[in-house]
Amino acid sequence: MKVQCVLCDEFHTLNPHSLQAKRLRNRWIQMFLCKTCDERIRRNTNARHATGKFHLYNEDVQKDELI
Ligand SMILES: [Zn+2]
Image 1 (cartoon, protein in one colour):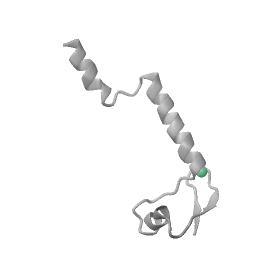
Image 2 (tube, protein in one colour):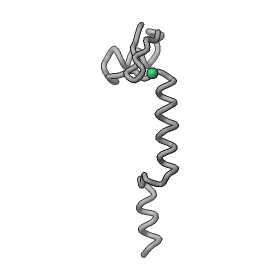
Image 3 (cartoon, helix red, strand yellow):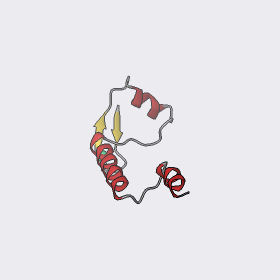
Image 4 (cartoon, rainbow, N blue to C red):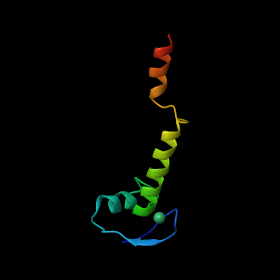
């Protein structure tokens, strides 16, 4: 099964029996990310987390500390 990465437009061959291939066929997931792009996004997201601009679940903790 041939799939195209939505970010780098590279074509990859996917094992048609893999869970990811089944998900794509059944449209549970609409797009395919290759491993390279997936890892790059994960790294960038983690780096952004590290800058402290993201306040996800830490926000409540900080509020509690102020009171
Ligand atoms: Zn890619």
